[in-house]
Image 1 (cartoon, helix red, strand yellow):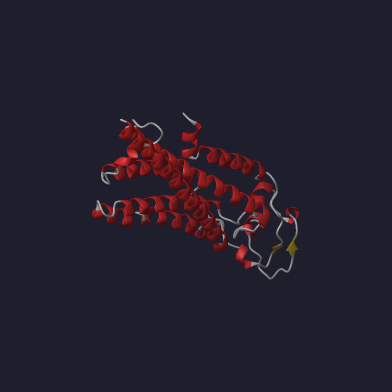
Image 2 (cartoon, one colour):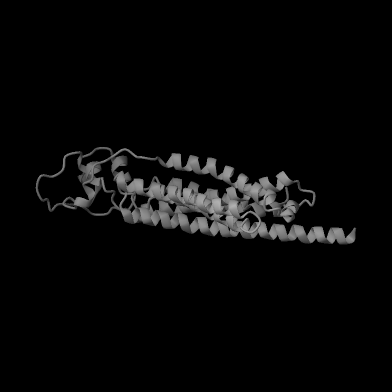
Length: 282
């Protein structure tokens, strides 16, 4: 496989994102910024509840569902939209129909995975540098019993907490931004953009299919919103942390979707020029 083809898939950027995520995993072992804990801050007295959705479930759903949607989407663009010029992609002028479908679907899968990794890296950096306390931090620090009277005491270190599980306490200082909301938005928003783009491409040739795709695009977007809302209702994050996670995911999903489309368009145009030159020479 040529280096030019690897570039059109976005693999160099993916490798860079993986390196950043490994760095973030190493950084996660560092203690976050120690924010002052005011015992009379009732916004930190929320009861600890079980998680509605775990982060690994969001990642598994994104990595499983997104390639299926990309395969179906590229098949529809080639088959229903009759965009024959895409059969010349990538590189080889004799590329088959399914090769073109698989190649473009793989490029978008690399794009959405890169968006998730980049957003996760910056989310982890934000957690360590901000050190925002979770809504259930009082429980993490002092146990299940809430104070019966006003307390003016301020904790300046984790050693003042009555709980002995230091990892549990440190995790309570990693609220901002929400990694769950970030992961949900990076996958969900990328898929939303992809489906809306396919809808626009099929608007003239298949108007009913285009209308269905526009309605279906609400599904991944709703999933991203739902993930963020569960972090608030589960008392794991404040609404500001969830909004910040959404914005991170939206930002990188949008950037990677645009750059992926630009790379694929360059390959398409290059393939069409090569094909025109070959037919003229013949």
